[in-house]
Each structure stands twice: as C-alpha cells, then as structure tokens.
Length: 158
Image (cartoon, rainbow, N blue to C red; front, top):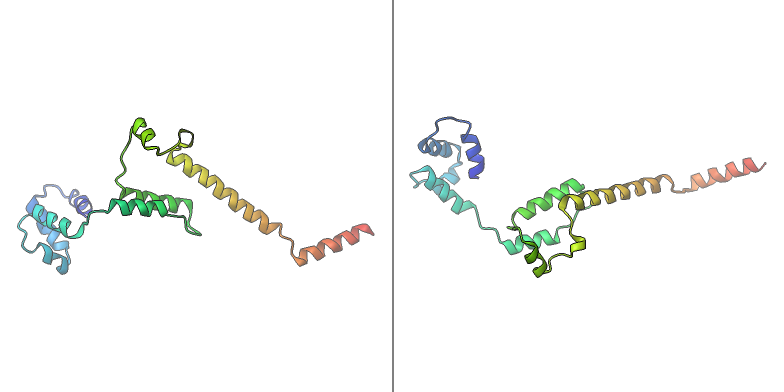
C-alpha cells in the first residue's frame, strides 16, 4: 500500500511529511480513516495502516499453495507462469550455495533447469499438443468423408 501511495507522491516536488499526511487523509475512505484518526504524523499513520491491513504471510501455507498449483484447462502458459511467480513471491525463497543444495538433496545435478528453460520446454510441448489436436480434428474420418472416399474409389475403379 505504501509503495502505491509513494509512487503518487513522488510526482509532486517539495512534499513534506505534513503534506503527505494531509493527502493520505484526503484519499482514505471514512471507514479506513477511523483507524488513523488518532495519529498525528504521516509515519504514525502509515505504521498504523500497515499493522491493521498488512498481515504476515504464512510461509508454510504459501509454499504449499505453490506446490499444489496446477495449470487450469484453457489457461495459457503465460498466465500460469505469472500465477506461479505471484505465488512464489510469498514463499520467502532465498539463494543457497551448491553445498547447501547438495546437502539438502533438493535437486539432482542432471535435472537442474532454469525457469526460462522449463518454460520454453513447456511452451514447445503445448504447441505440439495443439498441433496434434488440429491435425486430429482435420483428419478425422466421418461417415460423410467415408462415403465420399468410397464413391471416389468406385469412380476411379471403373
């Protein structure tokens, strides 16, 4: 929340904390203003709003949600990748050294892939599947096409 507000305030030059406080108050709905009514400074108001509305992320649950996330039918790879990136943001991922990685047994060295490489492979598979579906739908034999083929063979045989 503070980031969005800050991006709006940065466009105005010479804004003091008192001005920020006044602007913040003017933008808040009356029901939200009730939370900061007793605050006297911009910093206090932002801290109060943060404590009220920003809840700590349950990292275990966030990792669980990322783990079980599956691509929905009709969802594009780009949409699915964006969903994964959004879920990943709450997981508090951190870099590990090769020794930590090996020790934890997180991944096999042969299977180590970068996100972009995995995405490119998934896109290739998705394109191949789409091509198979198109080919299958075009080459499907229906009673009408079967009769047409039989008529054509009989004509050619005579």
